Image (tube, rainbow, N blue to C red; front, side, top):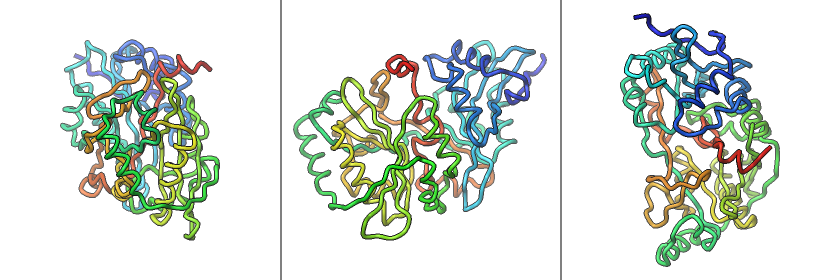
Length: 366
């Protein structure tokens, strides 16, 4: 039997329209990657893609039998630039499963990149990743701050004792002054220099502009936030406001900066959620120092604190347990340092952790 050909989409002459059609046919739920405009933004328009689609396809003759979405991106690890890639939406046609296609795709990627990451790993894909030497974080840390308990009832049943405990924890945060300035996301690059000790996808001006200023669907807001009593670059904050079930909510897409300014950044986010009348604000991230700041200010963990369960999916609204996502990571010869997730900066700004669904497009016609 002839083995399938494993090759990058552009090198094989596979068009974006072909990949969109494959996703539309074989992915269980309607997804944004079935739209040519969104697929072009994620795959071709990313700075590291240089205009090409580097997704990996498996071909039997001219027929696509599998696709792994790939966005090349520079990953900073141990203060050095590495060839990294964000993986997304791995699909194998039903009649091609069990034939080694998935294993061959992963081997191809491991021969091309030094660091690979992905999110939202399915039960079918996980054994293949683990067999290829990836590590798995089953529950990515996610935290939330409730700005209006009455409005939050639209998303969760909050008993009086749970509200009392959560409100008390949040009220015990140390008061903090802040000064915020709205800027293009590309202007946050100087604040991203503080990420040097952490493993992270490099947040230079080009990536920040692509990811936030020129997104194919969402409107993001970026801010530099400073503690007025401190010197140096402030923190970078990227927010996305949404209205779900007639209720405003706020997502923190990215947060980084010198430790002396992070408490001010969180105080700004909390005050901004209240000012906008949001029910709550949430953030997903891995970095240990940031998690420590969140816990110190009384934010609730969606994984560890059982009092209130807020959904993590909103189009449609869906509560999964746990209400967060999973990650996979592979780093070749650098595994021991790389696999300490608390020393990595991964947020919703990475991979496909903040991607619209087709239900979102239906409710936000362009």
